Image (cartoon, rainbow, N blue to C red; front, side, top):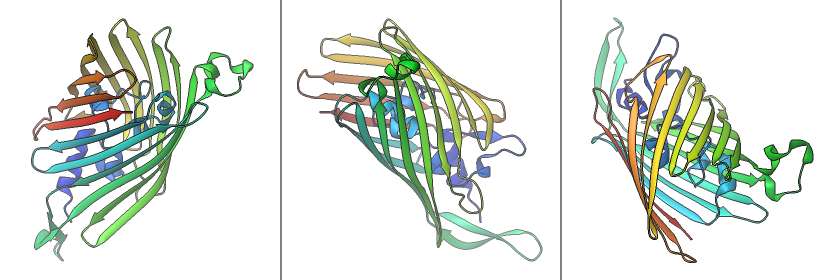
Amino acid sequence: MSRCWLLAAAVLWAGSASAGRSAGAASLIIGKLPVGVRAIGLSGAYSAVAGEPAAVYWNPAGLGRVERRRIEINHIEQGEAIRMENILGAVPLIMGGTIGAGMSFMSQPPIVETLENASGDMVRTGRSINVYEYKGAVAYGQDLGKLAPVPELGDLWNLGSLGATVTVLGEQLGDVSAASVSLDLGYMYDDPNEGRSAGVVVRQIGTPAHGRPVPVTGQAGVGQYIKNILWTFDVLTAVDDSMRLRGGLEWSHPFGPSTVALRGGIQHSFSSALLAPYTVGLTYKLVLENSFDFSFEYAFMPVRGLEDLHALSVSIGL
């Protein structure tokens, strides 16, 4: 059957890959789709700076940097075809530990079933097939510096955090369903005095679905603040992409209790002709001391030859 719209959704993060590596090389495409509007605005150069509920999906070690209870709701759309809804939350516990969770659901218009006949030709049956994909995750991040010291590791321990995520990926294609359980493991180093950070994460180590692997991904990156400017740089490799470089830049400026941030990102793949090589985004954040904070974020991704992607999120910290 044709899965053209489902594969088209991969333009959120993938492109037309070279021989032997394609978006279709991995099952459960929703595992490749980004969650978190700030992360999208930075083109996914996010393994070293994730520090909010979206860290559940990017690098669970970043949950160890969440200082207050947070909930985030975001919506992603590409034209009238692709819709993805996400809800994320994080709750700090004791001794620097934070638990996080996320749930995502992707929908698209029904696709027309196409089958191969006895002559080898592809023929439409006239039957429409509904397509849904989802993922749910539970994660834990630990600020290592708030545990007993380990002198042998020095600042790698004192300024570090570890995290793990268990994710369930699933899809429904008409009467056919598939699911996979996967594990993410991550580490993050964050030196607030120097404004620098680094992170490494392996995502979606899981069971196959439809006889194909889930999109296992390894990513490592660095981040650096220079006054009110953040730059990030990441290297990524995946089961269906040999190597990808990602970079992001973010400028922020406070206005009393409010902060405005502008950001942009680029990426380059050594095995894919990317349909979405750059992104832009912005944030407005209002902080009321000893009360709560509120953030609104937007990201835009122009997509070559297809409809552009828009992402919106609202986040509240208590």
